[in-house]
Length: 505
Ligand SMILES: Cc1cc2nc3c(=O)[nH]c(=O)nc-3n(C[C@H](O)[C@H](O)[C@H](O)COP(=O)(O)OP(=O)(O)OC[C@H]3O[C@@H](n4cnc5c(N)ncnc54)[C@H](O)[C@@H]3O)c2cc1C
Image 1 (cartoon, rainbow, N blue to C red):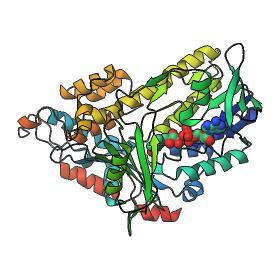
Image 2 (cartoon, rainbow, N blue to C red):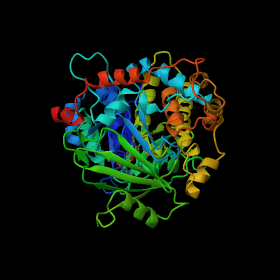
Image 3 (tube, helix red, strand yellow):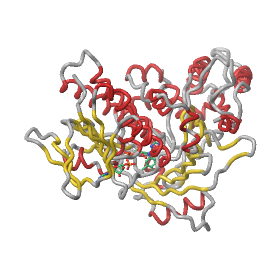
Image 4 (cartoon, rainbow, N blue to C red):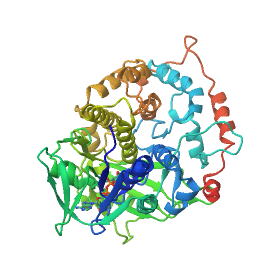
């Protein structure tokens, strides 16, 4: 399989410019011509400011250093997500979901063991915050990059200004030979095989290529409007369909700098994000319009972020939650919001953009692939499974919530629209089964690892025999929690404050 000779990317949001850069990096020396067409009049969605460690991998592939991109995009480091108010169980009103690093392997056995012991009614500590270095660093306000000589590397993501990242990526792509056109595209013409022949702008101008990447956002102009690819809604599992967003002044401790984690606080009909940048805090309330009107959501949102009296402008957004059945159809691949969206709870959208692009390029670069239809089928199966796997993890946050104070949370807890995979994971947990083995059996650990699943269940404090707890006797192993705390504190000492790290950039 040789790569298409010419590729048009429709859309210049984060997805479009990420695709342009990756294609230029991998294929420009193979003569592939890359053109990106977008419309300044339409603009980009401009939200999506938290990432997973995949964004670091993306910049590493392109050879872009943090010093080159982070200060230009007001970016900060992210060690994980702080969940607050998702459970009303005593002692479990908040927990931290860290990005997993190699060092965690030394402590994981104790965490998993205690979580299992607690599921069998032994009164041992099993709150995830007691076990992980990123959590410790987040609470201390330290950054994720250690001083020289420290032998371990932590996984981390970033927070950033989506508009500025877009501009940075655009410049990078143009410098690497990508052509850019500002045109508003109205339609596409298809050939007799049903493939896209050309896309057509509002003045009738036609743009032809061998392959098209649809990065037109929620509009999904090519994959859905032209090629009619089926959209699979996740709406019966994920109720949130709206968001209201507004930035506030940066909140930071004088000597520590901005927070190094995303805040995810449960509210009456959804949850509130706080994303700390160097110059502001991004805030957004993601909610379900079936349970709360936009006006009421805005009032609750403004109250929570202390902006009730502030006349500052909020933006209301609608979200289409689900995915296209196949991301790659004929000579078109959907990428970004046109491909699917899961709501931003775990900030996975940019992560999936990169995973999709890597998989797409790998299909052509794999010398064993000779048949495009086979490669396409494998690709679509893989991407679909990835979406569904990530969806299950996000759904679990709602299904397992321990609030029950509003109809929204009660309905989420009652929701029976769960995939067989998620049902099995929940059953495994509540029957004191081996969760790690179950995740391995289902082959889903590359979407969310056993650590992530353990953090979610344990972080909510949902241990099936919690009310029948007995003191832990000699029949189980006792991990010395002070020793674990000392281990974490010793390692944490090697990490400078977040402010110091940002200052070095
Ligand atoms: C509320 C919310 C919060 C989010 N939070 C996160 C997060 O924390 N982390 C994360 O990873 N992701 C997040 N996302 C997702 C993230 O915003 C997107 O994945 C990311 O911005 C990529 O968007 P995109 O490039 O697909 O679409 P867009 O940014 O919408 O870009 C679409 C592009 O298509 C162009 N276009 C559209 N129609 C036409 C036309 N007719 N002619 C020419 N050009 C056209 C536009 O001009 C634009 O350039 C969030 C999304 C929402 C809705």
